[in-house]
Length: 516
View 1 (cartoon, helix red, strand yellow):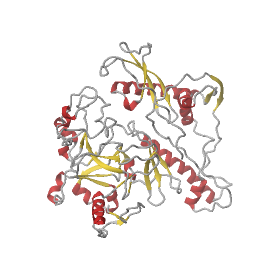
View 2 (cartoon, helix red, strand yellow):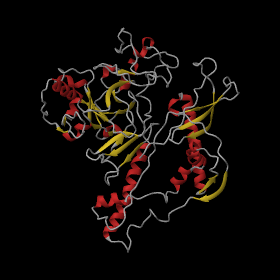
View 3 (cartoon, helix red, strand yellow):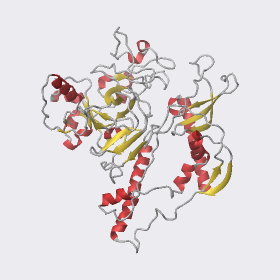
View 4 (cartoon, rainbow, N blue to C red):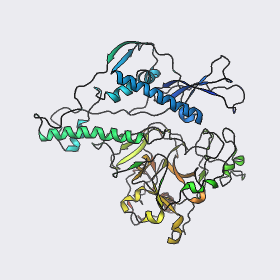
């Protein structure tokens, strides 16, 4: 799938009158827009006390960048508007046809998704003549010869994700005519058996029905657990496998752990969290109380944040140290630049089928160096218990070993060491493949617990500018990478360690093996 031919131009920066840190009364949400890239913005009306010089008092806000008060208003708006569109769809399957001439291109999604309630109509009346069936993939999966007739290649478009460029809608023209949505009679409601079908034909039809339902069902199930994060979709242009194989009962966790019964909860240590009393956004780590435990400092010995003002990781964090973000007890706003990994993921993800390494993950939008893409989640367990798991699950386990030294591998130190198992619990990051030349690195981060508990989250951070739909990778064994580079400098050939498997990353500096 190609990139959009253009991106919306950014709107001029809003210049607010008076004190920028002053709080204003919010009257409510009065409008909404969706640009061509799927980014939603809401028109917020402000109450007495603030207006522009021209007398207007509304601004366009995105959910993720808004305060908690505005977010609650947006959620209420979405629920009310959703109920209105659903009620309209229930009354009739008809859709208004508008005059397209004066309508701007960037208004299309607003016009169809919101004003006409197209998504609710499709949800209630699901048969669509635009859906293309992937007969080739199904026949390939069933080992049926497809050479007797022409093939139908499916091209499934997915949500290209959110854009950070604002877009302000113009008034749309009124509807001119009404017609029902076209419906394909019984196209997807085929009977379980038919007198005219052979046993093989019935199997093809059955597999077609089940394949469509598996992908859609899994995407919808995961969408309910994203907690305002960007979408996760599945793409397979290689073979007929529609979704990855998951263990029965797999649970999607966007940004939290599920703890084993013998793992202490971070809530037990909530009173130990130190917080800041910064107003608005934190600007100086030296004056930010929650940074007191941090040892991240500049060359002059002054404490600094791990992120830039644009929420990009600075790569100044030395080994054996974690990023300390502001926490729920801090007085700074949700827009504070020291709240990054804890925020809802704003990078849309495609889980896609690679040609030789199973399923992988990629972003549908370009990523800047230092961008926090997401966090690894799963079953948080004690290290001793994780070490007893079957070898087939080792590739899903991350050891939380940020404070561990090379001499602490004996059994007596395992009581306060933990690992994260993404086999039966987890999110899209469990599909990130290994590369000897990765474009992401893993960074430990805390915000809802103290560093001494040894239960940080693991953030995946882009180490370079990454073009859209480039596979995202990490080094499963970064210590081995350092050893390989050292051996290369000394012209010494490394032999694979016990338990290593062949590496398929294809990188120019591939070690030839990976230890999992």
